Image 1 (cartoon, rainbow, N blue to C red):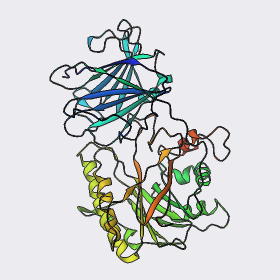
Image 2 (cartoon, rainbow, N blue to C red):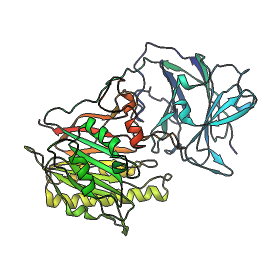
Image 3 (cartoon, rainbow, N blue to C red):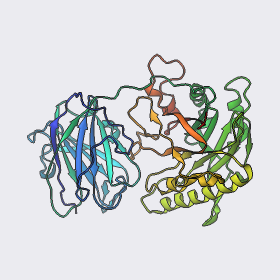
Image 4 (cartoon, rainbow, N blue to C red):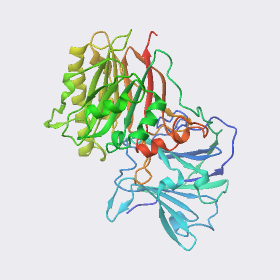
Length: 469
């Protein structure tokens, strides 16, 4: 049984002229430092469009969409206890968000939303109805949450926030609120890569959508104009010939090279390049070292970049789903270890000077799979290379978000599942996540609904160049 752990935040939701608004990236660099890290801490902020909440909890890192007991946040959106819910724990609240909601004696993953009906009951809704976004998706001691003001019931400029979790004693405290200046869209059209820079695109196009929704996918690819594609969720019956055929028809005179992971895993990965490239025998089949009969979804290609040293490009798709330290989490860790071994083996033969690893990491529990490849990742290139691989930092064109997965029909909320890492002598020169709804209404390059129609994952784009260029 939950013991109420009550935290109250009251303050005017100013339209603001303060510091720039918060980028929801799970890094917390735009939040104040926390003085006492041994106590649960909540603070809030707002701009013209959004309400932001930051939760810090002591103890071990937790995945809030996979908790052992629910975490509830309730909003009294008019700061008036006479309206809203009349239940003692959430008196006056009009909206409840439940992380890891309970079903009987067990919790299930995800987030549930409930809106108070004036007739006297809570009506279940989707968190997507309120523009709910949270970061990070991985285990952490703190999480940041954002709600869209225009989607909240009521238009009051004051609010109260109640947080309830398992605790020994009820606690009530006031949370001060910061007033922020709304972020303005950074870009309303897709930028082109600089001359001589290599454009990498990683995209999980769900359920074989690369070929099943070919016209939509092709329109997005044309608009982005990538040099190298890292593709995930191709199906077993989709082969390299069909993928090459589609890519070769995008622009006249192009001759794409395609390398795929083997059949048998149900979903396959591919690396495709319009620059001269060679396949890597090591990636004909990569298996888990702890389970040699299990094929890992990973593909590789050496990009023979004209005028520069070769680059090894890797596309991966790690195991989906699961809770912290669960079997799926451990599978991802095993897969990452085996992929690292395969990269080192491939490098010993192909001798690249640059490394690109991208794809769907499915980081919904521990960050360990990413860290296995990141930490001291340059050592995989051998020679004088040392230090960590760089995790690239793509942001939506609107400058507000970093999530790469979005599915309104899911109990899970938007998150960063897809990453691109680079190493060797390569540096990031530009990066963005493409949600075509961010594009200006005057754009004619691609339909504004194209990315959502193509997949639940968004295209992740990174431009790279040698550090000395």
